[in-house]
Image (cartoon, rainbow, N blue to C red; front, side):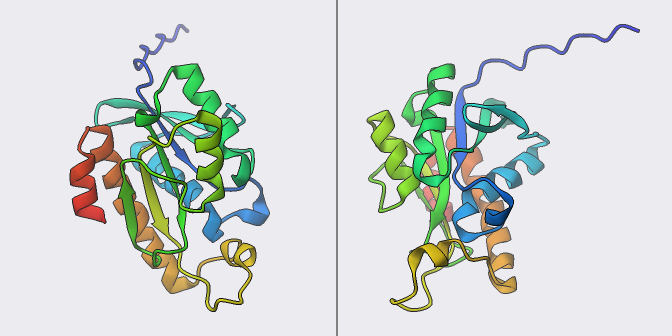
Length: 198
């Protein structure tokens, strides 16, 4: 039996990278909000992020008529730029079309902040991406994971902790909103995404 070869889905125009740490011990932790966002996008648009490439897990996804590469770097958070830069170089994607999704401890669970570009804001994953690419022109969606319970609480312990049940519900809503923001950004409507979701 002969199977018709699938038509090429077209060139990859965008990179959508969600930041996190690989491995079971990090699953569903606050620091892995970016991974959770990629999983949510993949489920919503019927994509699979199961191809091991660019030092991470990747998969092609069509969003609003645009072809994007979904990427979960497998390099651990502090070296996220290795994976992101490799994918950008392969598909010749400029920073303006490489969207980064990651956790933000300054936002409550359920809140988003969409930005056109900017500094790393103290986030080690973004810091490495900006350092290795030499650019801060990355659009980004920050996903709120909540502040430390008290100033003495160890930051590493906090971001590697898991969400409570009520926080998880708020996070699910945020991940759905993140999908909406990604759609608008890919359509060239980042201002609208900022107005709607910030």
